[in-house]
Image 1 (tube, one colour):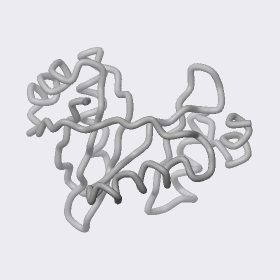
Image 2 (cartoon, rainbow, N blue to C red):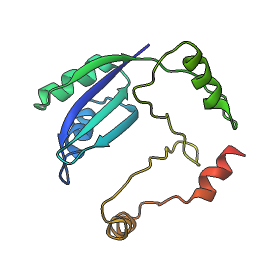
Image 3 (tube, rainbow, N blue to C red):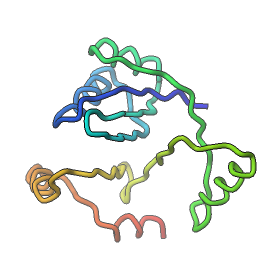
Amino acid sequence: MLRQLSLFLENRPGQLRAPCEALARAGVDILTMSLADTDQFGLLRLVVRDAERGRRALEEAGMVVNVADVVPIEVDDRPGGLAAVLAALDEGQIGVEYMYPFAAGPRAGKAAIVFRFDDPPRALAAVQARGLRVLDESELVAKKL
């Protein structure tokens, strides 16, 4: 099992930065994350190296953190890999509340994170203006070949 950190964020620009910076200041590496939103707030779920240190860093930054156990399951990286796991869970009458992947990037030492923006053209312009790489599907697919 892994320990997952969860916190609510106001649904407005800039709110995701604070927990990421708090973890960075504490030297806590984010292994994977998921952000789900509603009209009024977002729910950030994080798996980090050293969950206890991560929890402390977030709480010291003034955030309310919930800690829960989550179960990582290896999935074959092929068509039907996830379906096989879900079939096993279904046969056991086990419901899935949510899930999110660990990501691997197309280049060594890089990760890939998928974002959804409310204004994609402005977001693209902003990240490209800072020299950040926007990946396309062919790069991600090429890594898996």
